[in-house]
Length: 227
Image (cartoon, rainbow, N blue to C red; front, side, top):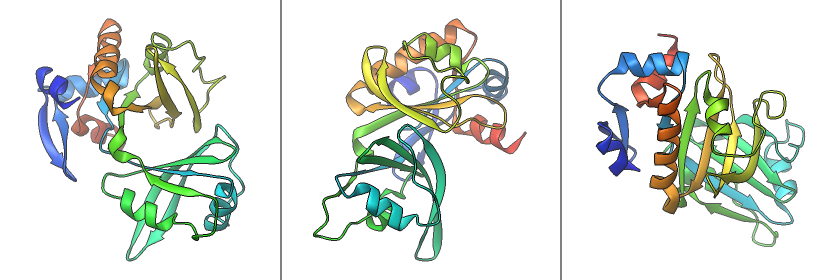
């Protein structure tokens, strides 16, 4: 996706070995899109760890003993203690025997080690970060943008915050997570990296049709900080 982002005018910066757009030349316009229409931003540097197998639930329950069992299709924010730091996670339950843990760039190795199962158990822990690309879709028109590329009902009534689902988006298999911001709807769309440029182009064109567009990390941070 970096090639398309550069063609769109992105000013790039390295983050944990990944090139990521800081801005596209006009930070004020990007922030305005996030507040009034929709902004899309690159989530490909995020870490992702898959936990799957017959013993996945028992392992997950043991590691997160202070929380109730997560239902299929639900997501939640959690934290783990690792050495001298606390790592934040977004835990997704995709099926009876399958979970995915999303985390900050560079933390996937730590999460993988934390989720490591006993040798005799029927569960596998896999770092899938390098195989996934992702796009954040944020703003008042985020739900409408998604309705342009999927038949899913992603409204607040049918698909509220902290839900996840696997479906098709622009005819490509993907994973959608909703994690609203204080300012309104916010989705994360993940797909295999081979479809990265195609999906980025599709959602960029959709965003442009409704007054939005690509935004960089500076505008996202400013929105989160209440600038």
